[in-house]
Image (cartoon, rainbow over all chains, first blue to last red; front, side):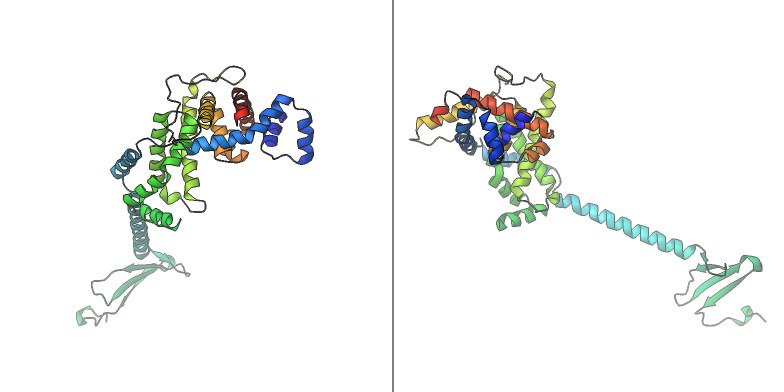
Length: 154
Length: 190
């Protein structure tokens, strides 16, 4: 940017301080000064001209816009399915995590592996404990009403 | 303003009737802005329509921190500047001497509502000014319109036109000088 161009613009827009403006004006020729003096009036005329521009066939424009936006999904219709999809996705992830936690082995502090399994009876549960070094496993049943005699360990 | 906020809320929920009212409230100013930059009625109409369609599709992005009109004007200006940039493949003519490049087929006279009985002088002056504006390149005209009519700061113009401050200052300088030269004879009438 040429310094003089920037200074000219700022001077014409009244953005130069008094001292700088005085210094700048001292270097200007008469013609530039006359043109600058007329600039505010021209600016008004520009604004006036802009304010008098009228839109041809305004209702046709509305109609065109209405047709176009009705042809495409409304913003709300676009936003909500996305939100629903996100919600459904989040639910799926949560369910997958819950199932993984349920079926995958859980390590306890003693390095005993605990398996849990769903049972047919809603009031009962079954867990299997296995410690690698012990070469054995314990099956723990809870909530069963009784153990039939033929199944009881003697 | 409250009514507009209510319309915007309804439009956000997909109410096209509410958006239609919004269009009616802003269409003339948006058209005038775009027309002043492009000086072509067909382009200005297309871009006005495009501005409102873009606005409709981005309504959820309007945060209400600035007036809706400002947001719309930004969309319209960006659309106009984008169009100018797309057409930049055509050879450009800087204002170093004669008149700037203007498409001879373009309709450069805006539709103006005439006021019966108004002094002819004022009308003539506006017509002279319109012709002078039309003789600027779209890039120079955009800068003049954004500064003089829209009253944007130099920084805002740079941001809207995607140009450096130096380019903005330079275009503004040459555009103003060019207008001053073309309007020299009419100046005494201002």
